[in-house]
Structures are given as structure tokens and as C-alpha cells.
Amino acid sequence: MGYYKNIEVEQQEQVDQIVRWYKTNADEVPAYLMNLIVRDGAFLAKVLTAWENIELATLGEPKPRRASDHVALQVTRRELRPTKTHGSLIGWSLVLCAILTGAIILWVSL
Image 1 (cartoon, rainbow, N blue to C red):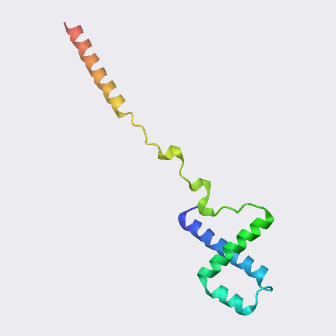
Image 2: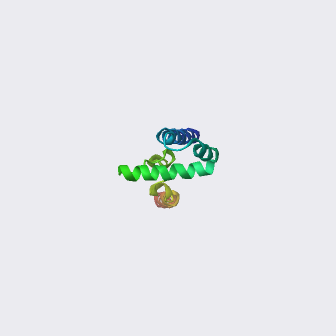
Image 3: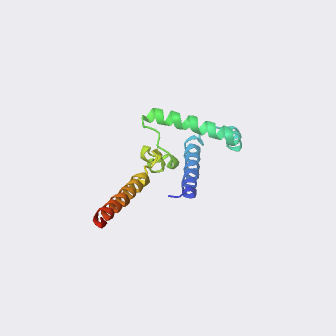
């Protein structure tokens, strides 16, 4: 998936989380308090993370990974290693070949 697709998936997960929280708590929380929570975005985010942590702790399940944290998007050690260039080996082998060719031609001509 591309970068913007990952952002879209993450935003949809946030919307799904808000809908789940609202469905489970709509009957328990009074309307005036629900309005205060929903109107303030930062407070809503804090409430959602606290609710999710409590919900996952009671279920005993690990928290699912976000789409942007997927293994396919992580950089591996192999990609971080500097690539080895064999240019110097090829260059020296060409120089050696030229010297040997020159020596053979000189030996045959004498």
C-alpha cells in the first residue's frame, strides 16, 4: 500500500474506534457529559486511549498494530548496510591483464 492509502486506513481505524466507544458508552454517560467529551478533540483522544487500554486489559489481548507500523514498511539491517562496490577489483584485474598482455607481446616479438 502507498503512503496515502496507509493514512486513509489509519483515519478509518480512528473513526471505527470512536464509533465503538460511542456505542458502548452512549447509555452510561449523560448527554451533557457526552457533548463535552465529543466537542473537545484532544480530550476525546485521551478518553479513547484510556478506554482502549482498559478494554484490552480486561480482555487480555495484545493491542493490534497500526497499518503504518507494519513489518513490510520497516527498514531492515540489510538495507542499512553500505553496498560493496567491486570497481576496484575489476580495475586492478584490467590493469593486470594489460600488463600480462604487454609482457606476452613483448616476449613473442623478441
